[in-house]
Length: 227
Ligand code: SF4
Image (cartoon, rainbow, N blue to C red; front, side, top):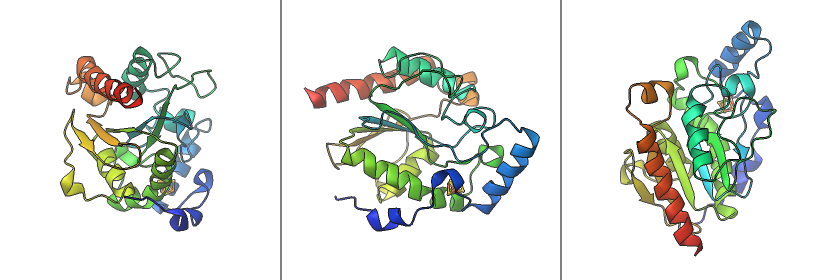
């Protein structure tokens, strides 16, 4: 399937100044008033522009990406993610605490389904759809630069990726550890994991072993594809 979204992409507002979701734009203003040193704007993707692996989370966390301006940076959700990326050779360091550090991702890029902080970490369906134009553009660029693996962290990210790729969600059900053949571009696959949130890791819904198994699968598949 081809994936040409150029017409829609040209109509996109600049991400940094986007206020297309009134509820989220208003919430960010409130947050900025309370925490003047916080980023409190849409958070752009981070990492290698020629990545083979694209990781898609839900949305910026209040005191993480929303504070620092970089996905999964500065709060609990990033701890397991960056430790695991480093363990599998996908990040230069195992910690991500500030957007001003020298952390580099290696063949990997991280983004979110929704680029603005939502109240209670819960974006509305309309907001997920609205922001999908940005994710769609990222997916399009990722495929064009021969990306091979997308990792969705949680069911919302999974659905957003399918929406961005214009796929029927009923054909690709979310399950931790699931791998979906997308037969697009360079043998593209969608991998699912529970989100590495504080709640999921502290309740052991997602353990370090479970998360590492997902990455082991992805890295092995990427090696096989490139050999
Ligand atoms: S969530 Fe996305 S579409 Fe909505 S205001 Fe933020 S950047 Fe714009």
